[in-house]
Image (tube, rainbow, N blue to C red; front, side, top):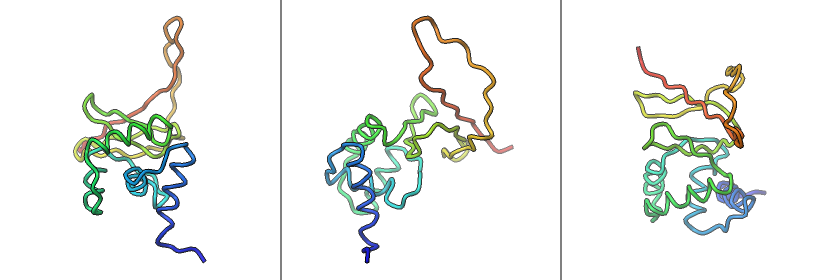
Length: 141
């Protein structure tokens, strides 16, 4: 019989080890908050820091930023930049569009199948298009 209380910790540890990251105490704590329940989420470094504090973890904001960067570097999360100064980190690493709810400062997934991009401009000579990010901004009327 599986101990239900360890499942989120095991899932977080497997998530890290599957990407070749050493499961340090801080990484495990943050990974459990991000993927322990097997749900995708969008977080800012500040919101993840606040969530870790509310769980009693002693992780600095700098450690959260560094850990999220390490998660991005190995492909565990993707960074979605909404404004030049506002980044979200998405645990759903598959290509998909996002809604940014301007009134709430919140990022959510949009249905990828509903997005149709008819054409893209040609990349400059010697370059290739690596990725297309689509952030659809919403505001109340």
